[in-house]
Image 1 (cartoon, rainbow over the protein chains, first blue to last red):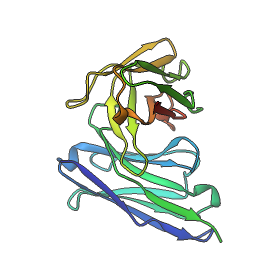
Image 2 (image 1 turned 60 degrees about the horizontal axis):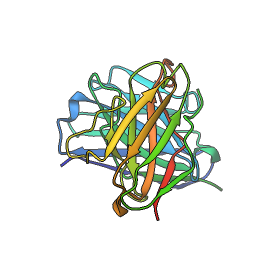
Image 3 (image 1 turned 135 degrees about the vertical axis):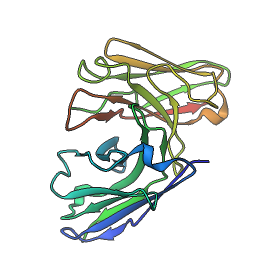
Image 4 (image 1 turned 120 degrees about the vertical axis):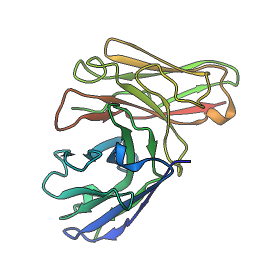
Length: 119
Length: 112
């Protein structure tokens, strides 16, 4: 069975950093693109970043570009999101999700990690 | 790129059929046959139920079906069951290189 488990969320003051991790199991990790999608409480979902199966291609939404960095470690079956210069509007539930090579839909999702940016 | 528009809530009685719409633009829903639907019980991981407009992953009930016309996609749940009560959201691949995926605003399906 496929599992994606996010960790690293928490309460952080504005301007500080946080690193999210997503550990995967139950599938061949290094043939999937991995993505981070967030949901602000009471609002819809927003794609914020993705990384290709080999880590060579990454993308970011304008809302986080220059502040967030996505990376992956295929040996550890994990994907990471380094979040710097956090703002109150970054407060959200952060999901990691996977996309099969050549597809454009999210096969599996994690349960999410809550990030709260507040003083 | 704005979020895809879904009704906030849809309700139906057990056994009935309901339809959830997902309206986008010619840059997302209308551009590709890459609309997907997800079922989300709060506190759990979202689950893929429809991909590529109308395809069901293995193990997903055939009571779930999808379609698309122009810039609007639709999810139909037939033979509504209590376990179908959940949040549903759509997603579409887009023509934007900086925002390749957009999501719907989400619909709460209630079985009354």
